[in-house]
Amino acid sequence: MKILKNQFLRTTAKCAALLCATTLINTSIAHSQNLPGNDFLVTWKSGAITSKEIEADVLKLPPDERVDTLKNPRILLQVIDNLQVYRELAARAKQEKKITPEVELAAAIAAERHIGLLYLSSVLLKYREGLGDLTTAAQEHYALNKTKYDKPERLNAAHILIATKNRTQAEAKKLADSLREQIVKGADFAALARIHSDDTGTKEAGGVLGIFARGAMVKPFEDAAFSLQKKGEISPVTLTQFGFHIILLNYRESAGTSTFDEVKAEIADELANKAVAQHRDALVSTIRNDPTLKINEKRFEAYTGAVPTRKQP
Image (cartoon, rainbow, N blue to C red; front, side, top):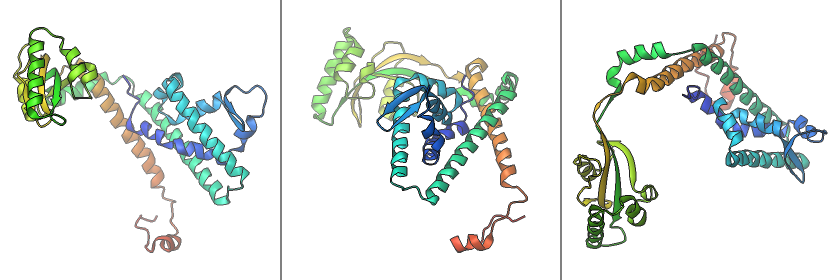
């Protein structure tokens, strides 16, 4: 159960560019590359990146994604590529004396913003851990909101689409009829879907659409699918605006109410995220509403042509 993946923590991923920007002024990193004993993960003609720097870079991610990132070869290569490109660009900016005082200040502000977000993330994680086991609260929520967890009748089905885009309707119907006849006689539905279906999103999976309720599909398809009653039943060839479909019923799920055990993790996530969001808002509000905060109205008006509407202490 990934309760810690709340919406705020995901926003720290947006700070990747901010961390890269700090390389413009972070000369200590550049100097550290020349020290002996560094654990270099990658080197190139004019620079290098250490393992510790990579581990620092992934701090921008939610905590439960950091280890996965470092273990995933494809994603780790993306992290290395991103950091190497920005480091090289920063080095060239220094070399060509393109770092003005304004750029240094912008980089410092970016670093400050990133540090602030990481701090807030750590505070919220600690707060979330302090909430403890939310099972009792989740049970109370479930009891008071049971109808929220009503579930409609659903189907798990597969289909073969014979599109009319590149063939006449008569040609498409003839092929669909032929395929249905083969299936009824025992041909493998999934194998025929992989060969003939024009639905590129499902053909490699043998035409499997997954679970869906009424309202998820176009009406003619929905009517044909929900008319099927038994596992393995095949629909008549059905025409929609996409072409002709042959539908296979894998199974039905009756309408009902999800049990508490089925939705316990979902409710715990919901309650935790709500509590963390409230704690975040309260913390930020105390900073934003600092009674000592003052805005220089004349300077503000010089920029915007208007006086600030924010209340002054």
